[in-house]
Image (tube, rainbow, N blue to C red):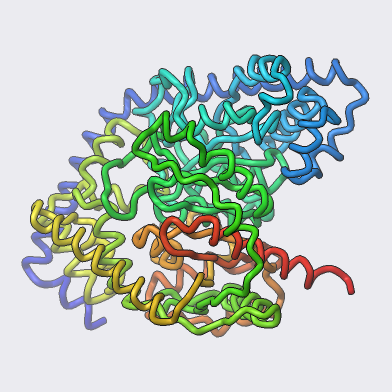
Length: 585
C-alpha cells in the first residue's frame, strides 16, 4: 500500500515508539487508579439489587390490596386518558402504581434498564391521597421514570461514572420538584451510557441495556434506559437529557416519541452531567413518551411559574395552547440527506413517505438543503463538545473502569497533545474523517481560539436562520437516525449523529416521531449503500444497521428556538397522518 511508506519514515517510527510508551505507562497508572472504582462498583450493584427487591415488595403489598387487579387495561391507557381516570377517581393511585411497578420489573429482567428504585414513591402516593380535588395537578397519580442523571434526594446520579457513586443528592432537582408538585410519582431511575457522551447505553456499573425490539441492538443513548422502558410499557412518561441526540436517538431506536427543547426553556438545575459549562451545544432536558400528546401534557405541567420561582434563570414562558392546537396549514421545509451522512434506505423512505402525507393533507412542502454540514459537525459541534481537549472528562474518569464505548476516545485523549496532533495528521492520509474527528477532540486551545469558536457558532446559527427565513418556513422535516445499531457500533460510526447533533449546535427544538418500520426492500437496498465518503465510518454505519427488518424508523421535526409548541404541533400532525394511513379504510 502506498500509505504504508509513511510508516517507514524515522519521525513516524519515533512517534510510534512514543505512543507505545505512553500507552504502557497509561495502562500501568490506570491499573493502580482503578482501585477506588473496583470498591465502589460492587457496592452500587448490591444497592441496586436491594432497591429492586424493595420495589418488588411494594408491588406485592399493593397487589394484596387489590388481588383481582388486571394491569393490562391500565397499561394500555394513553397518558391523557389515564390522568382523566385518576382525577375522576375511576382508578385508584395504588392500582396504577402497582401496574407500572410490576411491568417495569418485567421489562428490566429482559433489557436491564433500571438503575434505582425511588422508595419515596410510596409516601408520595399517600400524600396525594390527602389532597382535595382542587389541589390535584396535571399529572396527578402518574408514575414517571427518570434518567439516572436527575437528582432525587438520597439517591446517586451516577452518569455511569464510579466517581459519582456514593454521593447521594441532598435535594430533588428543580424538574423533579415541579413534576411532584403536579402530582407525578417518580418511581425509578434508568440506565445511561458512561459519561453520557456515547449513543450506546452501557457503563461498568450497571451494564448494557438492550433494545426490546431486537436484543442484539442498542436502545441508543445516552437516555437508552428510558427508551427501552417506555417502548415495552414499563413507564408511561420519562425524562431524559440531550447533548447530541441523547433523547432523540433512543426514542428513534426504540419506537417512541421524544423532544429536546431550546436551551433554558426547562430548568437544568439538579441534573448531573459529566461535562458542564459548554456555551454551544448545551445539554437540555426533555420528555420521552409513547405519543406526542403525552409530551405536550408533560410540557404543560413543567412550563409553570413554579419552575421559574425555583430557578429564576429559566424564563416564565407558559405553554402556548393556541399554537399547539392550531390547524392552519404549515409551510414545511424538508431534506432526505444532509450531504454528510448518507441516510439508510429506511431513513430516506421515511422522509419521502411523511412529506407526501403532509403535502396531500394541504401543507406546503419545500426542499431545503443544510448549509456546510461537514464544517458544522466537525469544526463547530465536535469543536465545542470537548473544547478543553477532554481535560474535565478525563478528570471525571480518573480511577474508573472504561466502558468499551469510551475506550478509543479516552485512549486518544490521554495522549500528549503533540502526539495526538501527529496521529491525526497521519490518519489524514488513510481516513480523513477519522483524522478530523481526532483533530477536533484536541480542543480549542487558547481562550482566544475558544472565543473565535463560539463566534463561529453564532455566525453559523444566523446563516441557518437566514436560509430558513428566505424560504418563509414554519418548520423543518429531516431524517432521524435509524434503524437501531448493533451493540458496540455507536463508537465506530459516531459521525452518523450529524442529523441530530446539528440542532443541539443550533439550539433549535427538535423531536422525533416513529412513522414506519424497516422493510425487506429497505434491507435489500443496503446492498447498494456506499456512503458519501466510502470510508471506515460509512462501512461501520452499514454494518450497524443491517438485519433490522421490522425495527422502528422515525423522522425528525424541527422548529426555531423557543417554538416548542409549534414543534409539537408539527409532530402531532405527522403522528396523526401516519396513524390515519395505517388504519383500514
